[in-house]
Amino acid sequence: MSGHSKWANIKHKKEKTDAQKGKIFTKLGREIAVAVKEGGSDPESNSKLKDVIAKAKAANMPNENIMRSIKKAAGELSSVNYEEITYEGYGSQGVAVIVQALTDNRNRTAGEIRHIFDKSGGSLGATGCVSWMFDRKGVIVIEKNDDVDEEELMMQALEAGAEDVSDEGDVFEILTDPAEFSAVREYLEKAGYTFASAEIEMVPQNYVRLSAADAEPVLNLIDRLEDNDDVQNVFHNLEIIE
Image (tube, rainbow, N blue to C red; front, side, top):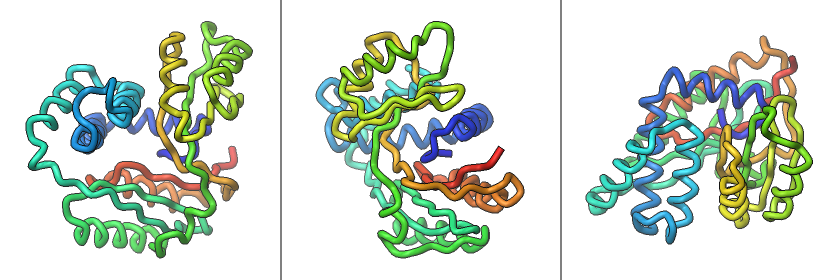
C-alpha cells in the first residue's frame, strides 16, 4: 500500500509482498522493461533504471530476477509497448486515491479501474481532481535497529541533499525533492543503509483519519486496485487511527 509511508502501511505492504511475491515481481519487471526501453540497459547511465532496481531490491526481488528482467527487456525492446497512465478518484469517506498504471491496452485498463472504484463504493474522477492534495517526493524508509544512529543518519541524509528526516515510530522516513532522490538514495546506500522502501511517491499534504472499521471499505478498494495486473502504485491520504 503505497503513498502513506507511516510504518503501519509499510508493514501492510511487506506482508502483501510475502503473500504475493510473484505478482509484485512481475510488476517490477514491467517497470524495469519501461526504464530499459527509455534509457538503455546500463543502470550507471540510466538513472530511472537505477531507481527501479533500488525499489526492486527493497521489495526483496532477487538479483537474478532483476538481471533476467533487464536482459529480457533489452532483447525484446520492439515488443515492449507499455503506456503510463494515472487515474484519480475517491474512496469512501472522501479518501483521495491516485492510481499509477502501466498498460498495453488503455481502454481495458480504464474500464477495469472504473469498475473497481464503483464496486468498492468509490468514484473515479477527472485528471487533477485529487492530485493537487499531494506532493511528488522521493521517499526513503529505513527500519530502526541498533546499527542505525538517528543523529548520524540525519546528518548524512541532509548532507546528501534530503529535505527532511523524521522519526515515524519503528522507522525513519527521509523525504527528498524528486530530482535529488537518486543522489540521496545512492549516498545512503554506499553508507551501508538498508531500505524498507525507496521510491518516488505522491505524498499527501493532509490525511483523512478513520477508525479501522470505517477504513475497511477504503482498504478493500486499495487491495483490489493493487491486485490489478496493470496497476503499479496506489497512493492515498488514509490514516488509520490506532
